[in-house]
Length: 387
Ligand SMILES: Cc1cc2nc3c(=O)[nH]c(=O)nc-3n(C[C@H](O)[C@H](O)[C@H](O)COP(=O)(O)OP(=O)(O)OC[C@H]3O[C@@H](n4cnc5c(N)ncnc54)[C@H](O)[C@@H]3O)c2cc1C
Image 1 (cartoon, rainbow, N blue to C red):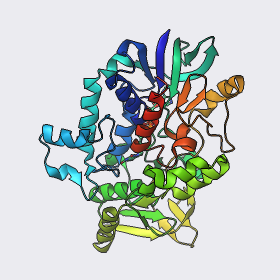
Image 2: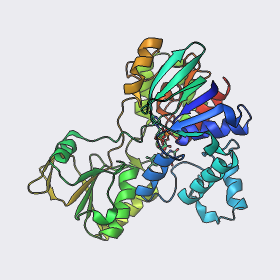
Image 3: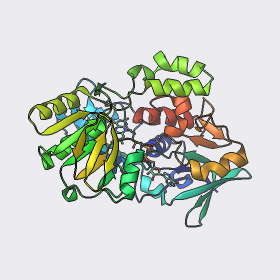
Image 4: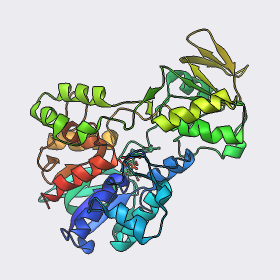
């Protein structure tokens, strides 16, 4: 029996694996990372490359390595120029961040622990767990960490879903089979008002100048981060953790997230592009799409002719993996809050015996930053206590 299986090799799972291996909490031969993809960080790479995000939103101290200043050192070691850190918080360029990730993956020889499989069941057996895959294989392990993210669950509004069924040219920017950008038929409408919509609109503007519209429901919200930096430490987290009512914690998370917000520099770039007539910015809510006439209908009565619609409407709010975890939850009587998310031990994020969670599944304990790189670092630090 192996010692530890991490299910999910995205930002969350890889952060934990790097921390465990570098801090010698586990030997490579005792660790398995199970993921649907053939290599680490596939969803991260796919999503960020699709929207051509030049810089991360998070600061330089948020990365996968143990030492918070690792990325700063990396910049010097690899001779990157200072332009690879942006603004007051030294937000890293995606290029340098990805290079840093790859160098860590190589350093700890993470691929030796990699097992490409899609997990579809988890069962307690004596002193350990059996992890089942959709190919009918099973793997035994003393401990299991669930590090499955939401990146594979794009959110489709109902009108868009109906349009898709009728074969309209509507896509979600994070769907796995997103078409080549050259194949998109202009004019293009981007639906959404957050950082993804903004990056995407600016990318499309260069491909289809004057033929891109971004439609968003409420005034563009400008925030440096997707939640206040106070949530990174005791300033807000103390109160959060003292509160034992999980419904109220869920509300705190909801209120804290600047969902659909953009950074100031993106706001300024969008406004400049609008002034120059290269894009159209429309504050309105799409309510339906007529497939016969390729027309979007908005709440205000506005109609918009469009060749392609691209949704930048984020991800589902349901807990990831919940379909195949249902049996485990019932059999092991695992606690969930009303929102369906796990209730876990504060110290080590343990959900059931030797079963740990991180990422979205840990957000009722880690708080609003749980899904981000900062959350991965915090979750890894807690899970490490149990290893
Ligand atoms: C465009 C974009 C930009 C972002 N920028 C930032 C930023 O600048 N800073 C920041 O802190 N955060 C950022 N985030 C948020 C967050 O850090 C990323 O979304 C990150 O990729 C989430 O990592 P994850 O490990 O939770 O999920 P994922 O990347 O989805 O990884 C989960 C992995 O689990 C695997 N998996 C799931 N289910 C199973 C199963 N049943 N069997 C086997 N494998 C499974 C998946 O294949 C996947 O590889 C950004 C997000 C997006 C979308």
